[in-house]
Amino acid sequence: MTQLVSARRLSKSYGNFKALDSIDFSIAEGRIVGLIGPNGAGKTTALKAILGLTHFDGELEVLGLDPRSQRHEVMQQVCFIADVAVLPRWMRVHQALSLLETVHPRFDRVKAEDFLARTDVRMQSKISALSKGMVTQLHLALVMAIDARLLVLDEPTLGLDILFRKEFYRALLNDYFDGKRTILITTHQVEEIEHLLTDLMFVNHGRLVLDMPMDELETRYTEVSARPEQADALRQLGPLDEQQSFGRTVMLFEDRPRDSLIEFGELRTPSITDLFVAKMKVSRK
Image (cartoon, rainbow, N blue to C red; front, side):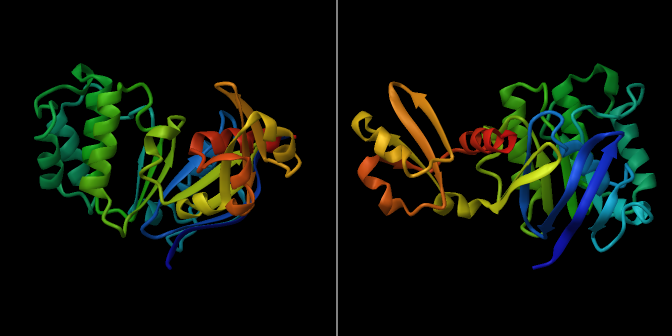
C-alpha cells in the first residue's frame, strides 16, 4: 500500500509549549482519515507541517517529498480547504476560475463549472455577495477540479447549517473521492463524518493517542450497558471509561473479547464521539 504521508518523531514547539511531541504516523493512498482532537491538541499544527506552512523537527515526507524544502512540488498534488476561505472578496466567481486556470496546471475549469451549475453560486456574483455556505461550495468546486492526490480539510464546514454540511460531504464522496485520492479531515462535528472515514487518529497535547482503521473499531472496543446488579462485577474487569446513561451504567472496554462481557448486559460498538471522550480522559491522567 502506497504511503502518501509518513511522519517519524514529528515535533513542533512554540517556546516551552509542545504543539507536536515526537509523533509517528502514516497515511496511505485511497484513505479518508479523520484527525480528531480538542482545541490546542496539535491538529492544525500537523496540517501546517504537511502543507509546508511551518518549520518542524523530525522526519516528514508528503508524496515522497520534504514539505520544508519542496513545498512547491508538494502543492502541485495537494489541495487544502480551511474553515476560513481565503478567496479575494472583490473577485467575481468567473474570475476566481480564470485565476486558478492560469496558475495551476492541474485545474480543470469545465469540471468546476459543472459542479457550480448544481449550486446557487452564479458566475457573475461577487464573492463578497455570497453566503458562507456558497463560498464553501465555490472553494470545494475549485479544489475538486484540481487533479490532486491529497485533499486536506481543516474544519471545512465550520459555521455552516446542516443542509450545507450534508451537501458538502455528499459532493466530496460522489464527485471527488475515487478510491485512489486521499482525504485528511479535521472537524469537531465528528458524528457527521463517522460514516465517511476509513481511518481514525486522535491527538491530544501534541501526542497521538489512537491511530487505527475504522474496521477495527468493532473488534477492539465494546460498550456494555450494565445491569445494576452486575455493575460492580463488571467494573472489576477494568473498563477504559464509565458513565451513567438513563439510569444505567455504561462501561467502555478496550481489547477485551465480547464473549467475556455478554453476561453483564447489552453490548454495542461505541460511536467515535464516545471513544474520543474516553480516550481524552485517559490521556489527561
